[in-house]
Image (cartoon, rainbow, N blue to C red; front, side):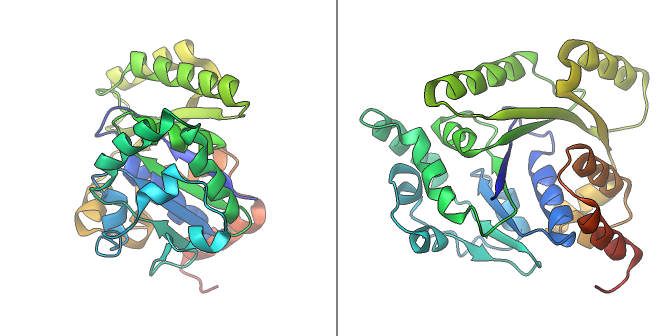
Amino acid sequence: MSEIISLINEKGGVGKSSSAITISQILAISGYSILIIDLDPQMNTTKMFGKTDESADIDYEQLFCSKLESKKQVESFILDTEYDNISILSASRELNNLIYKIYDKSKEANVELFFKHNLNFLKDDYDYIIIDNSPFRSYLTTCAMCASNKIITPICVDNFSYDGLMSLFDTIEELNDKYALNIEFAGMFMTRVAGRTTLYKQMYESYEDMFGDKFLPVSIRNCIAVNESNTLFEPLLTYDKRSTATQDYIELVNYLGLMDNKHYRELAKFLKGEKK
């Protein structure tokens, strides 16, 4: 049974796509089967896996506005990547128009649940489905949330929205009540942390006081390897598996309880340069 995790923040520039890609890669290297879904029209995650050409003709309306009837139909949207254990449902600019199609359909049906229904056909094929969402909150984001078991939110010290987070909490509660779902907010974590500055320490303590256990005590350090890997469209662990950000993301994956000891040993072999 797949666990479906959405990364959501209605602000851009917080490392959301980098986080989705790196968490997916860590889990894949560890031996888990991963489907990464790119719902951001900026297509950063899709570009990372070199799938922009293949995504041009995807019929997103069918996937989000219809209840499909077979696993084969859903599988037709999925592409392999050159990375072991990672498949992708890629993005395109057409996602901008899809928002309005979902809205129109919502007038006559509970369209927010159709994507969840369709992904359910894949529940036995992947250990984790990771969804990279657009920073623009829309009906598309709502569909992703309804399909998800967990939601995590990357935040930046200098790009933080208290109102946005409270709105996200309210939306999760509303969707759980409306559709009898069990969406869990698994936590927020700080990204692009530039050293243990006074501002960082103050904000860290403030988040802890404000959000309690919803604030994860794992921060992703800012390092040049992340920027370079994004520029070269090469996932972080492929580009620099020993970077500080790699270490932090591994700690985050462990803190979230996404990896057992058996799979961690596979990851450790990779980090040491051992062949599987």
